[in-house]
Image 1 (cartoon, rainbow, N blue to C red):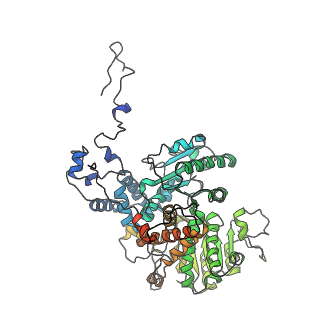
Image 2 (cartoon, rainbow, N blue to C red):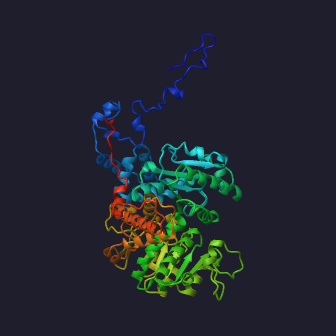
Image 3 (spheres, helix red, strand yellow):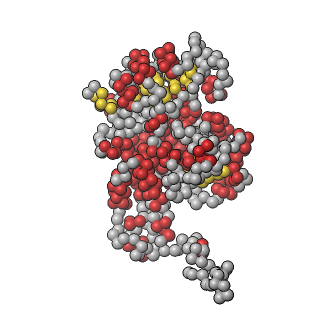
Length: 593
């Protein structure tokens, strides 16, 4: 509708609607033809039937042929494979999700080995760094310091009434990339895709959240593509006040929702977990989830090494939240083998930027390092190589975010220390891994038991093929090398099932025993055939069955600890978990008579 003109001066009347007036194109009652095709949760695209097209006034708005969801998924997969670079594949998948959520998840669930490294690590790291450059449409919610006093009312702006799972970050320590500020929103978005695909949450019940309290990365202050608040990070007193308002708002709006803390810096993550872990349903995946995954992998690695679990000696490179979290969960495993907590912790040697962590080296230790600080060091050890040479560890764990730090000399020393050393370079993305799979197998003469935080190609060494990833032994093509993700120690093995189980039983909180038992369930999910191939983690192709097993163990533990509000699951908890999982299927769009 074109605005009328005043006869006196030709200007538009102030009270006349123009073509760009909201009332000309916004239909809050969703009766405008084609509205359903712009709702990614209900859009079927070319799969709308003839009756649906007539009833919903879609006739003429779509190509004539009616397709099935399987045909649409096949089309999407073919398109995905045509993109040469992982970041382009990522952009395509995110665009697909924005158009048709059902096809996106059908594609993801049926192609987990191919798609997981694209929607999450390692590709999500590049996506975060380029977040503003590749931004297409808003997902989730953002809270800033300017929203103080308004957070609870802001939650009412969210498009869905029911939220079951929330992933929240402040962007202060994204993967091994550091402070990415609001660019870190790619992590909650990607993680929630896996909560749906692997864990079974309904996509409409997920909510990614960014606490945009500034960034200390100088380049973002003047970057025109940076979409976050362009100021320094706020001081701690203001920070904790705002987080407390946010947490209270979440608990008031969605009291049964599970909240997962993600990629908070060390100076905040431990305190936040301590403040809220007993107050509402939440956990920190970097501290607790990573720990459970690696503990599960260690249980099977110990079997393959021939050394009893409680006799292993651990050298950790990196003493941040993830490193301490991993150690804490392995300690729980060692205690289940008869060690006291003191004896278990005494099996660990941590190396940080200043060398071996001790109580006598003269600096003030961060509180989370104190429990593992050595008191028996006979001399000051400044480097990881010195520590490996001196203590002769049987397991080398990397969570430093520093690529290439497991050098040839260190790996050869590990092979001298024991017959089958455990080598876990867990930092991600791939560029931050402490060593590659090829380096680990080559420099240990093919002896090591290897798992990593990011995927690597299979390694040919002395006539034997080593598979540093998860289970399947076939190749799609060279460009699809991301499929070869065989033994990757990714948090994805734990957090979907842990979260789904805790939410299904309406747990009051996530207990340490629930997390430890999740790790045990993960270890038990590895088949005898997989162990015989040297795998410490199960095939990702079975991920939904694995997560159902983990969710079952979590629910059983919550009931045992009197933390579950829901206890009746019809006599078969695993069957209940499986039947409750979201399935990407189209439902009729026709009105019920």
